[in-house]
Length: 598
Image (cartoon, rainbow, N blue to C red):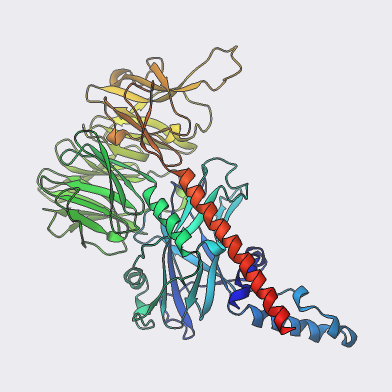
């Protein structure tokens, strides 16, 4: 069987597409099928999203491989039973069509931010992940994406009544996923999928979501990936993806440095007071999203309620627990006399208060989470700390204010927003919600009660990340963002105009004639990281994850983070070559075995 494995896997993807795909969804109200085991795997896209309108994957397609011969023999027997007597002996078993057993794992977002955990139950056997699949139905059109996997992750076994923990699997783009051509081409140069070395413990997460499985599963033995000849190549790719983690959550620091960029795979980039950048690698594959600092402590948190604490960036990090694994921690706020935190689950956002980093969290309020795609005109939810240290929450078109003295909430009408960030100097910057995609850039001087519009020139239609990027406001009231400098009407070479770093004052931000134009923006690096930018250094996030900055308003640029696509491509090519060599080896062994039998 093993000698034929690579031959069979090479055609699995095409075969699976024509097979009946079986659902593996686990019923939360029923016990596990007596002949089934449970499989769990975390999928991490090392990018902001797959591509509009696909945020992530809808299915993980797996194929059973240990019953191929049995399935084939049954298909041959069926063909012979239907054939005429004189034709029975002429049936070539290699030409008989048959279907492998194909299963679909469904995702959950409980306790997660951008990654997904796929869980399902399947009969005992050996399997591979055939592909990752994403489907979108917008009402007026449908769209789907597919990423083949097969040898890139390897083989795993399912045992009845037991758990198979496949840990984390990464989808790593090598080209820009935001380019329309990315998903059209079938080249191995565009992306890879591989498993990560570090194993995520999924049993606690699993039982939190499916408590009935506690009685059905024997967790004394947990199965992992099967070891094979390609493991060292996967390990190299795993390390590279972690080292080159995509991060877009920027936050200012005031005590233990100047700023941070939180990333996937437990990675943090932090800038010290001297302006130097460093990388912190925490013992997790989770996406990090929130940082809190006091004079003598740091707290970092993210997906699945994971929290890490240390006395300094270079100190010993310990993991603690404050909420369940079903909640992702997405924000910390520092009030006048206490701290605040926001978590998100599938259905709601929760706001907590706590007195110190060592104390327990007290829930203040929950807000219903709007997830229906048809409600795209609704604004998102954003916690805000006012300049006086009070907590406010902007939820859709209402601003809720918390009174710590009476523990009560008041509310007033506000503006629907799709993005909001609070700068270190207290200014709020945001993007208005719009029926037609990205809205206008806005700035609030009164903690979200009112907003002024940033009026700049852009392309008539979608101007890529420029439209969804926040502005930055310096302490002296200077506003900096990106905008297009219109060319003369007779210049037909560049009808869109040049995309430049532009500046004006708060008083003039609503006047699109007030802008001063500076250096050119870097193509595909159009997301301004306002939270960590200052008059000295303005930071931008690139589509593939690089972070660059300018000290002279775009006249020159330097890298802070440079994603090493070339090395990842090199290591992936090594995996492809090793796989092809292994296939050839198995083919030779199979032919030699057949010759010996003859």
